[in-house]
Length: 265
Image (cartoon, rainbow, N blue to C red):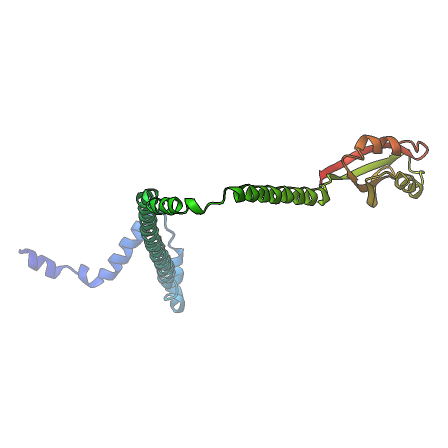
């Protein structure tokens, strides 16, 4: 019997779907996949078409995410291209500026080199001297020997007069007075000290070249406040030591005096 006749007598091809299903179940059992969902799907024909759609949904979500990534990459590439173009433009502008600067520098160097070369020309121009000498030789007969002394005396008199005028102007000019701005911290004994009376005592110190300015009370701690007062003094007439000595004489109100700031005016 030939192989074709044997195959013709077999009935396996008519139940191929059953054998395929049995084979899939066998492999699912070997791999540990439960068969309950397939049985339920067979019992519920209305829901049999809903589950195979999940892989499609996953595929569509993956496709959308890939498309989003691609669009993001494209946008980044475009932005990079624009940045590259702008950078190229900046570089071109810088090159143009550098070329202009080089040309200007070359022109300036040429302009400086030309006067240096042409400088010796004025030195060789004492040509008109012989003419003057000729005129002096021709006019020697007309020179008044006695008149020259008078002219010298007149020049000396004018010179002395100008010197005296300059000395007079310099003497009338006010001399520059050096001044300084001083900020003093005057501290009381305790919080019960009358700060108004303390300030009155400080301002009572008067001297030539001393001018008191603004003042304010600055808290120190534990309810105690110090007096911060400014003044302008002439350096040649008033010093910080003198101020401290005069202010600390009021021992009933003032504990100490410190120089907080000292600036030249």
